[in-house]
Length: 157
Image: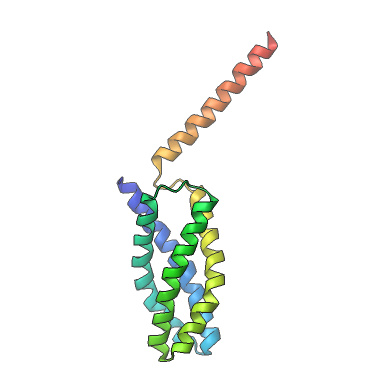
């Protein structure tokens, strides 16, 4: 795998972790009523989720599913399962209450799925680390411009 793709996957992991941690801290705080508990859960998640997300991204890069909205939906669902289990376990251990862990996990399912889907769609539009895709886009754009000009010339004759 080209070195730029590793950079892309690392960059995606960091951007998602920022969004995800803010969401977890706010949800945990709201559910427990304790901002320190929210911050603790968020801090531990930074470590566990960065590693889990990176491996999840590597797995999906190697799959043969067409890059489309369907692919992003499947990625969203698989990531949400992994991430929710991680959050529930961390929240349970940190709060000492399995119901708190379950409550936080259930609450974040909806918010995180929406946020993750948006994150995937944004990254799909970014060519960072995808030299081949960038070259293909330039070629298509040049090809379309050339074809349009030749059609116009034929129409003038």
